[in-house]
Image 1: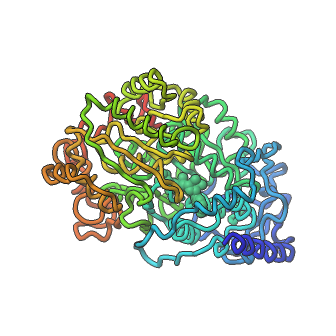
Image 2: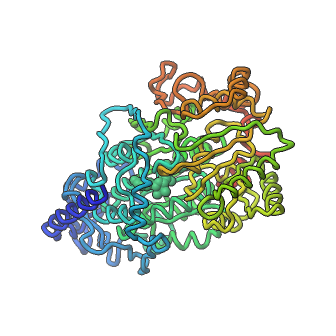
Length: 625
Ligand SMILES: Nc1ncnc2c1ncn2[C@@H]1O[C@H](COP(=O)(O)OP(=O)(O)OP(=O)(O)O)[C@@H](O)[C@H]1O
């Protein structure tokens, strides 16, 4: 398998280089990016290739005064990156770009190799990865809906991502696309808006990063920083709900973009803004950000969204949930971002409740809905256990589990344990107690400084502290190798949060274990939990089934779980197909008006919005910025 992938890339490279050679002159011709068209001729004539016209009309006229050109007002200088290669399928896989060594030089600085700290690209490591590659057979049913859905691909070689990106895919040791990548990448490369629901750990990051990077390279529309201007004009914006997740996406995207000339910058709260401003000033093509910090940058006019061609929301359901929605609306609808239809928008998550789908449709134009996995819920690779543990004994129960792990040798660097609790105070207290009892633990939650949070995460990842006690700030997106066991010491109120939490293990085809401590207080979760476990072929304890039968659906403080009632759950189905749907984004019978008191979880029942939890609203000291 590896050789065929390697061969196919090698072949693609050969044909690409042939095509590059023949097109070399054209490839270095002075392509005029969209925002610079219709400008008075400059000293260097610009020749626009007819195929360079963007697939969608770009309804903006460039930044005020336009990002100024290079010295003498010439067009964007050739930064060793491709010119446009004339459409997706041209260039025999290589696209004809990147005939010179990539790597940005806009700031006259050397691009740091983002792979430097990775394991050696040894044969053994490669084979190891190949053996544990995502279990493709675990995904059966892949519903898509929308008009003219582009067909999926089976290999990366089938997709015209370009030499440099293909090289980075190999450096990442990705042998073939995961199911969500097989579908989502061609859809995005075709310029379509997308709402994608795929299981945790199934490779969604690459699914939105590859088309963005490839699109920027092919579009050739790198935006030079206007001279003297302190405002940056990214072409792509990737928003995520937590600082750590933004950092992670930035790290991933830098790997994918290595030596392509595409520059990726991250901006998130809690870290000194000065460094981020300096990074932005050096130039940015893709900005990865948390909403709070981005709003700050926009208000300081240090970032403009006028040039955005690609907008990706990771954990999109969370981003449009009650805590974040106003900030997201402000960023997407009230600043200077091109309107939907004028940009390409991609929303990704493992869960997509219908009411959030409805909200999300405001941001999308003629989009395709994609659901990968049987119900878009948890993967079968995670063994789920639920134990009835009265609160009085939960600590000793945890201790027993940890001792058992040690006895089984499932402890230490290669076998990390992530323990979720509901409150920040609870996290500190449990961490202290674990340490006192000889279990090295650290904690991550919204009351810790960003520096402490990052240190804790590093220490956990490296295995120095193999137990991490966390609030929901660590529930989504974090891809930490070797998390063998997720313990829900406190269960969340919302089944979707449970799905994301347990998804910190069993990633990329690896197996994992998730143990939940269930108490009387969790009765509202009994039914959705039972259904989730059944769907994932898990053994459901008889006592839980009884709880489930007793609990009235959606009652007793579990209002948000009502989303999972009736039919396919967790957003595994396009809401536009539901008979009760009133059509794209218009009606709000289901959500609106009920946001505070309706079924969509008032702040008290859903655990959002303040108090002792970590979901503090925008502007608060929340971890979610
Ligand atoms: N094609 C591939 N082949 C092998 N591994 C891959 C491939 N694509 C992604 N991965 C790896 O799979 C892991 C999970 O990917 P990623 O973090 O993007 O998952 P996700 O779907 O975003 O998960 P979550 O829903 O938890 O955010 C990562 O370690 C990533 O490097």
